Image 1: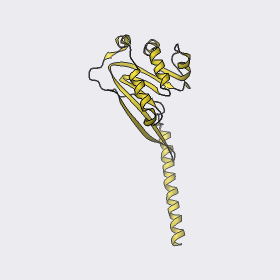
Image 2: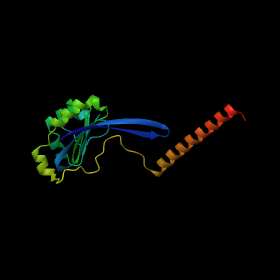
Image 3: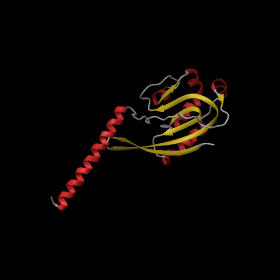
Image 4: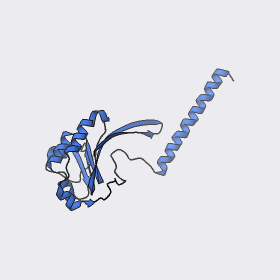
Amino acid sequence: MPGAFEVRWVKWHWLVAHRYRLSAFVRLLDVRLPTLEVRPGSLTRSDITLESGEFNRSFDVIGEDPRYLTATLHPRNMQTLLDARPIGLAIDGTVLALYDDGPLTDSLTRGLQALDRLTIPRHVTADWGQYAGVNQPRPGLSFRNVREDRSYGGMLLRLLGFSAGLLGLTWLGCFAAVSIYGS
């Protein structure tokens, strides 16, 4: 049974908060398939060039096996993704997920229709699929723009920015107290 939900998160850059949202449409598969991601925008790189020029200009396709990518992204699936633009596709294990950067209210109809129209051909499940047993998603499904800087230098800079902000607030409080109550 397909599901739709919206994820919101805040990413701090020094003292500035950036708010993000992601609408996700998820369907669990009966077989475990290799990882595949189709990103809208076609700005970075693509591991394969498919037969549709419009699709190649609109999406980046990322995956390991070119034969698997070609077999999974047959013409009907490419047309489904073109009709649902700017929705992206990710397959990881037993999870088939579509995602959009916009609010869920704007992309709900588009996302659920695309999720319903996407098909995994039988020869793909026979050649690359492994029976999943209990149908539970594997950890590791990731979406674009969700990378964080977890290096020691990045943590040190965030800590330094936070402490500078606290120092500034303390100074401001002292200045306000002196101006109100005198010296």
